[in-house]
Length: 176
Image (cartoon, rainbow, N blue to C red; front, side):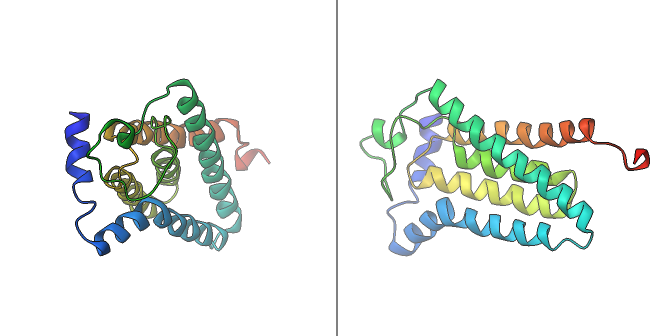
């Protein structure tokens, strides 16, 4: 089933130049727009103390997500679709053997999940962003659907865990 879902999304690649450019943009560069927008929102938050807290939690979740995705990749080597399937449409070159889990899916889902506890409307946009990035990475041929799903699950768990641990360890405002 993993291969069938991959084939479906990857079939969008190689259809026309505009769609290929769009998929490459969504799989890589769109994430930078998400990061830039988030940084601007959190830095210019109307409540500076709350904005600093939010920025700390989101950045902590992002760093943990990045590091844990690297650990999982090292512990569970897995070939990328283009290394296994001769008919995969590849829209750009990428390293091999480290497909599981998707670091992009983990990272962007951790942002969305950590935002969820402070800014629900914004978090919804970031959940959609994580979905778009993940599906685009399947379409361009660099990830299997289970790589993306695993990244979303791990990223969501990291975002929620960082929020939880921050709140358990922080000093309540009334105790200051």
